[in-house]
Length: 64
Length: 400
Image (cartoon, rainbow over the protein chains, first blue to last red):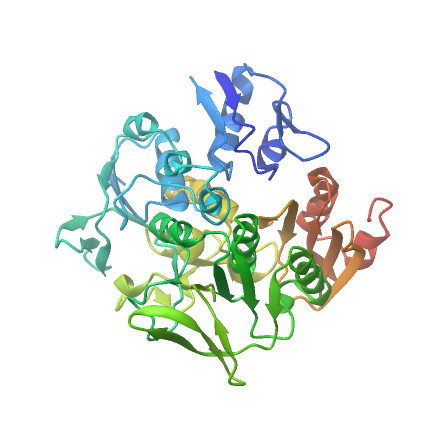
């Protein structure tokens, strides 16, 4: 799995961080998404998929 | 559970369809939408789309390839017109009959209109992409936009229109914008934010008539007789759930589709998104939440409950919404409406900072912030999710 994020679309909701803090974080100043791990391990795939699905800006893209 | 029909092809409906496939459902999924386009995102309509920063193609919720990969029976540009609950058949407006084993209702809401304004040039509502494009085409520097209703949609459009050099008047029927929803201090903050940007705000301004001449809008008449002249009028006075097609089914009333804590409206029938009023056990009350994030989360929850009837889980989220106006971002967690107390923990309208905590009975139920880093809110969200008692929640060292 390869994760990419569109920081220009991100609305800083932080839903991804709540679901998968191992993979996503937010910038201190404006809350925009920070990708911590572009290729998360299989044990995180379900949570990452869920993060992508609930992202209110459709800013997380997965290539699997 | 072979044939699932999802009625409504916006964020909520798409989320259900996607989650069903991810969870391994191999049967038919029919996704029905009344608009003639692939699922798109609505929050940017009042902001990036209206300002011209984004083109419509950026609103797509998924690429066409991603949608194709879901293997859906897509029925776009055709609304559902009737439900026969006993026979398990949805009828579409083109008279197609779609039998189902499970039904998901995700038909959303539509903008409320003012009577007598249909077809009048220059009178707008904002819910769909065509609405936003029509308004965008009319917003030019020096023109005058009057917005009826100072809720979040009205306020976001005011901010965007200001940025385009449009003269904006915001009409609020109550004494303070948003006071019922988020409290007086937040209403004052919002008022000040818009006034600082040159928006003319009238409160206690009850609209009696949209005045038009020769099919084109001329202005808005207020109860005290004043005529507020306008080149364009945006009517932003809330929304109505799209439930007419459910008439006779007993599933819906004027406040949407009634659902239990599992989001079930009946056996094998679920509600998702703006149209669904479900019992949220975290707050011990039924709620209908018109937030973008709720549509997606509820879609996931419904897909799960639908496919594993023996292991259903209550849907008990902490609702979340955001709003962007000028350079200020509002964020809120929880259930702000119907609060007993809105306690201001930080308010500095000059540097556009605000933090308000909401109490219902003896419990922290919500928090609203503006101009705060998003991480500031996370501990508050955790306290709301943990049903923190009011005094304990506020005595926390990081409370402000």
